[in-house]
Image 1 (tube, helix red, strand yellow):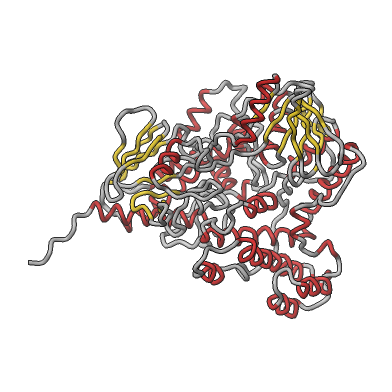
Image 2: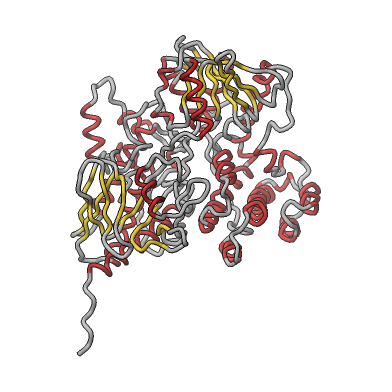
Length: 629
């Protein structure tokens, strides 16, 4: 196994769950290769700022399966994050040995993990170091659950190449040794990957070096050297998602600033008190707005019965076609209709006073209408009188389209109003249809995995999903508002453009929101994750696989069999002894961990791959039966 983060741990958990039925009594050595701590891996490792949070509440995070997951293997129950914290507090569980050692090594003034665990509730947005401790504990419990004869060997280093014949033992070459590990099969659970900069980023970095400027290309924000950003000076930031939120935190609170007031979900406003060491962040993006706030309430009553318009039958029909489906033509209309169904089911059943017709009648006509058709628009307009209660996915996706502001000051007021309205709506159960759409998004994501990402080569769907469903906690947006009022963050608007002015030796940014106006700065930060293509990935392991014949798509994703995760060769043939799971594959799912009782597509994938791997290994370990005399 190459990769010891949450995805690798989840796969190992499925090995433990299935081994007794598929591999009982046979010896097995599992070599786990990762330079970062097992369980947490790189992204969730403990040694990052305690100011960085998860963007999920503790009650929405689990590493364990339940009966909503479509598994061939057994369900193994375990605590969600908030339940684990309660078990730690009440003495029913202990921190992992790695977490205990890390706490013991800290000075008393630095140790804070147990205090965080003591204060954790289901509605808390935990720090990443709390999640790191949970993942470390899950890994430790998973290893303990492996049957006798199964041994895990840790290698705290990088794997740089896999070689070996298709039908024979594989060789996994490590960075710190000359002889390879020999393996009967290899499973890659690599997580998010670094990439070499594209042509635009190379040119911007060259321009910055030539003119003594600062350019930070796409990176994991926690790994970036933000000390280069000077206090008090303007910094252009391109990207308004979760990477920006991390940047915002690290150069404000991380430099000694503080907030007064409540950061909770009430209507009070925070006040930011600068330390004087902050830069001034000028932020923009394609949409020009931050990701939508996390929803701050639970769904009472009936959930929408999903899937309805995009389920196994529709996916089977798409896969049966001789040509791969076109996402815009064949898939997105079904996605939109599914999300609309989730929205209106909740509106009609939970808020019938805001509708004009009976749900049964509406559902029948909704099912008969084509997605995006005038008939569907007319049906919704007649049945739902308030436009605020109608689902407009285009307006959700591009809320600033067509809006123009007289000045950047007017834009600041307009964006603050937008963020306040988003916060209010996402924390008001009167708009619970929004939460139903969230469940619709999860359902759609689970179905699209079977298409292997081939229907969405440009990644538009994944970007929309993240923007709508994976946004920051509400308190982070309240902090953003406070920083905006304090002048530490300034909004640039939608369709942000960046120019390198060679005559003046400066970066310049503008947007469609304030035509003809520009902001100049000596620093530019690309606030987004690297997007590795096969040609630009920094993973020597993946580069070697591509060169050897592994298939990939234009978005930089490794092609895998969506059924069991086997790596596909360029001719479409599955490699018999190589598997891959994670966001760098065409079967990427919405996360290595998920909300309890939401089906967990990654858990389903882990189970299928673990069972395929164990079946293959059992066949290799057991000698063939002697022929009859």
